[in-house]
Amino acid sequence: MASCGDTLLYIRKRLIAAGCDAPEMEADILLALTLGVSRSRLLAMRSTSMPNDQLAKLEALLARRVTHEPLAYVTGSMEFYGRSFDVEPGVLIPRVDTEVIVDATLEVARAHPNPVLRILDLGVGSGCILLTLLAELPKATGVGVDLSPLCLKVCSRNAEKLVVQSRVALREGNWFEPLTGDEAFDLIVSNPPYVAEKDRESLQPEVRDHEPPTALFANDDGLEHYRPILSGAKARLQANGAVILEVGFDQSKAVSDTARHLGFEVETRRDTAGIERVVIARMRG
Image 1 (cartoon, rainbow, N blue to C red):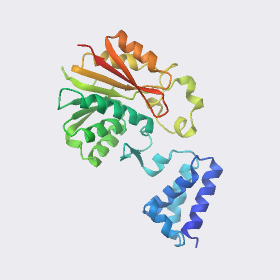
Image 2: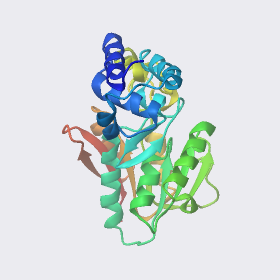
Image 3: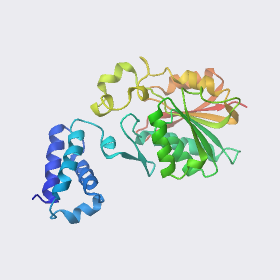
Image 4: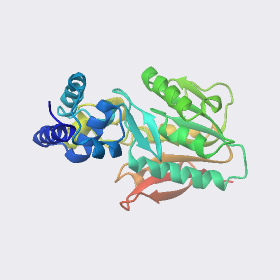
């Protein structure tokens, strides 16, 4: 019977052969998940025999990862802004880059004259943006919109995990369509699909072949969703309202120009790599 230490080496070799980026870390994660222990606990278990009844479970997880299924789908979760979010195939995986839109929105929110903010998230996905904002802003309420029933189901589950379910409403539909009457918001946030179709083949297989294309791709330049979001936002923003958008690495100027043309005052924020990743469009007056 192999030890846990030997099993770790076996997993690493399989991951290296498959070309996975971080085989040592991923081996720890997969074995810890199989055994139901923390990664830190594995260190003390290296000489422990690997239970035979867990080998089939491990092989099933490993078989998924070596075909470049994203690790977050294999494990069923992804950390974002210090919190764990459920994810599954069909739901866009939260990215570290997207934490910048949370930082920017919190900056706007904390300077806002209204202490009880209402936030709209267009394309809510797993809920990583909206639910994080609600967790950080305990007086705020939110509405999350998504075309995907699966995303709304996962988002609802994450709202319960973060204990913000009483302050969020989820609606199925495209952008502003599910909103009723004269509903208005202090802040509108969105991380819309913005990868240009021409860049599809350059993406990592984990992204290109496994994540939902409807959450990733947007015509030939990646910009198709920004104008309808900004145009529609004008009718849904309260006084002192703002739209906060995540953009691709070369899209900040085009999106900013669109916002200015529509009458917004514009600022941008950079990510940790120095790329302009967020456009903040404020209502004038």
